[in-house]
Length: 203
Image 1 (spheres, rainbow, N blue to C red):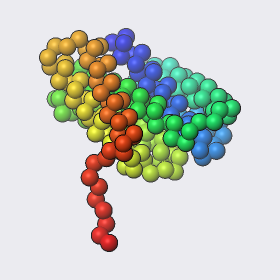
Image 2 (image 1 turned 30 degrees about the vertical axis):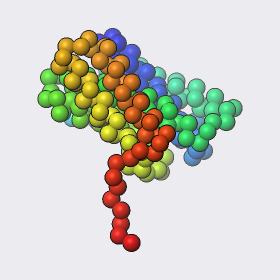
Image 3 (image 1 turned 30 degrees about the horizontal axis):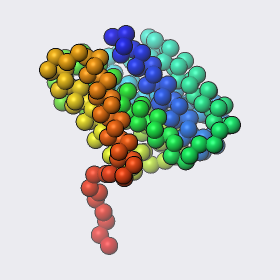
């Protein structure tokens, strides 16, 4: 579980960085950026823990998550003031954060012995919910609803992790393979604008 713990801290940091890059476009001050970054970083895991009955939620008894999120946001905030980054650069760390949180959420649910479908859903919720909160606080339509394949990549990675685990593949190796799967699907979708069929209004 030490590997999972380190991945969890990395996930919070990456999500905080992504939230900071997104919030910068709204010209928020330092405090506002930290609030959004921390909430986005712990949001998915908080909802997961509430749904699974793991109370108090993980960051209450281990506040290092909040410290990591605030530190990553602060570093990115001040660094970002001196760097000019492409408009959609945040999509790259966002893909990494999606992968990290998905495998963590799935692993946590699997450890609790939930059915495979619930474990996969917990992975997706952990993966996407922080980004939803981030976009809402930044007054944006959540990325999951307006972009190329997103939650589908998360679900694919969660299912792959569950499948590999059922074949007794080393859990850490399964986690890495599942993360690579999610990141590759997401980056391919971004590069070639691949998305699921959309419901369009009649004209």
